[in-house]
Image (tube, rainbow, N blue to C red; front, side, top):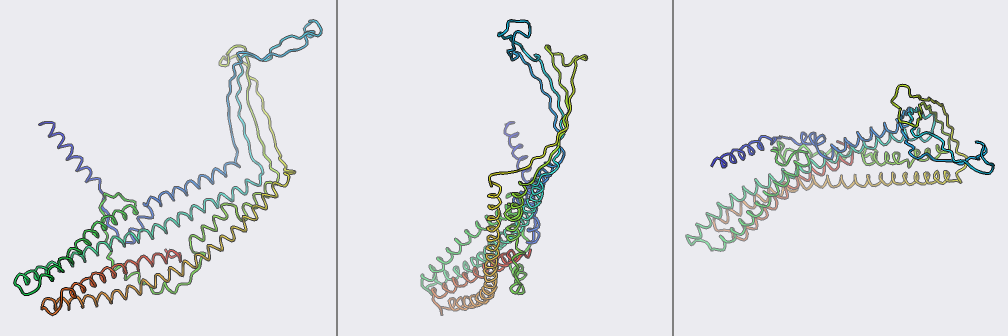
Length: 449
């Protein structure tokens, strides 16, 4: 009994703790976009890429700064290598040799070196390339933010669409259930045929199936939005914007007449930057040419050596012999069998390819703009058309409902009017979401964020 109480208390404590760990969020669309650009996992990793690029830039810079290295080595010659010298040196017989061991059993060396690159053309080019490398990831972060913004707008709209669909289907179900009840009572009184009741039951079953599906879809869409926002799936999330309000805000007719400049598009910027980062323009050509320039470096070495047949290196009377030197190295490339010339020509070809890629990117962006603009204009037209059609469908369904109750219309005509209304409702909701999404896609192409 005691163990059961303890287990129950632990279980209750874990449930309470889990509830306390849940966070609650409430976002408008703009707030959701702002939150996602900081907390979306892709955005977080894009920031990390920038930090890595900064470290890479410093790594390149440090290669041309003073380098200090220290070393300590110890060698135990437990079997000293022997050499042969003429024995007559030691008074031996001419023509014979004497074995001699040179060196000591124990050797120790301490060394400290300082090196400095004085001039290297490829290092200068590498510094320039490292700046472009950093710019590439900074632009990649901007692209990630743009993509996250569009993704949040689409996800936010999907949740609102599902939510509105649930509300409309629940309303339709409530009205249909009342109509079915009244019709069933009329049938029981023998005033109408059973077919009228059965037809309504079929329509109600279809509405119920759609309601169940959209309810599950709303839950999935909400979880997807949470993932895109960078929050936990278990957290509470409330959306404060309404679908109709967002649609009205995105009916921007002035946007359709905006002049398009491909250079403002982040993909164009990245393509141009990528050309530089890969040294496919001037960078790579300069690098290959720089390899034909002399390089100059200097170094200072300072150290101590000590020797002995016994390991006495830590004794105070142990002798250490210091040494030091200063060196300057000049490397002059003279002839590479035209290898550098071949690499330079490759760089020139790569430059021409890069220019072609850049031109292609510009042309594709212009085409994408025309498509996005056309889609946005169509979404507005579709919204206005579906709004008008919904009004007509509502009036037709209302008239058919009155005629059906008065026995002036068949169940088939009434059911057809209902289906037309339900289709118009979903078309209208989807048209509102399309306006929001198509505008976001057009702004992405234009560079309006």
